[in-house]
Length: 277
Image 1 (tube, helix red, strand yellow):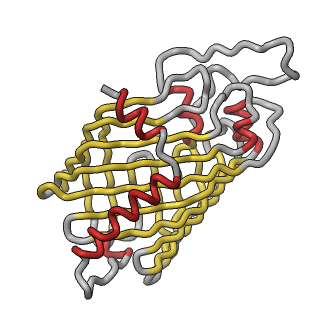
Image 2 (cartoon, rainbow, N blue to C red):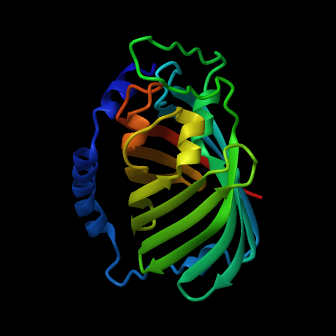
Image 3 (cartoon, rainbow, N blue to C red):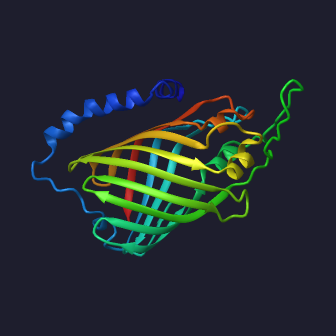
C-alpha cells in the first residue's frame, strides 16, 4: 500500500515543491476574489473553541537512524483548543499569550523535541555495533528518552505572510539542550482551497545532538527545511489534504555513525474530518 507514495515522495525536492506551487498558482489566481482581504491573525482565536480532527490516508516520516524503520501511519487523530487569545493546545504543543497587537503574537510555549520520537517509532530496541576501524564514538543510549522543550515563540504577520521565531530549552531534564527555530510562510487561499508554502531553519545545540546522535560530531548545528501544505474542501468539515516536507540535516547529524542519511522527507496524502465541539 505504501510502495508508490513512498518512492514518489522521497524523490521530491525543493525543485519539485516549487513546481507544484507554480502549477497551483494559476488556479488560485483565477478563483481568488479581486478584493479578497488577508485574514487577520486574531480572527483565528477571538473565540474559545475546541476542534477534533481525524485524518486517514498515507503518512510517511523518514527516520535518520539507520537501525530504525521509517514511521508509517494510516490514521492520525489531532485536536486544537483555543481559549480566546490567552491559551492554546495544538496536539502536544501548549502555549500562553503574553503579548498581542494587530499583527504580532508573543507566546510562552512547550512542545516535543522531535528527535526523541525517532527512537520510539517502532517497537524494536535500538541495536548499535562499533567497528574497530572507526574512531572512538560514544553512541547514544538505545533507550533515549522523549524530551519536551519550553520557551518563547514570536509570530509576526504581514498580510498572508507569517514569520515565526522560537527559542526553546529542555524542560524535561533529559538532554539539557536548546533549540532555535526560524521560519517564513506564505498562504494562498479562497473559499475552498488553501495552500501554504514554508521555508525554515532549526538550530539544535550540541547537548541535544550528542544525546540523540552520539559524539563526537563534526560540522554545523542547523537543519534546513521546505514544506508545502494544501487542503481542498470537499464538504463542510471534510478536506482533501496533501502535506510534504523536505529537510536537509545538519552536518553534525550527517557525521553521526547512527545515521546514513543526509536529508529526510515526510508526507501525508488523504482526507481530514474535523468536528467543532
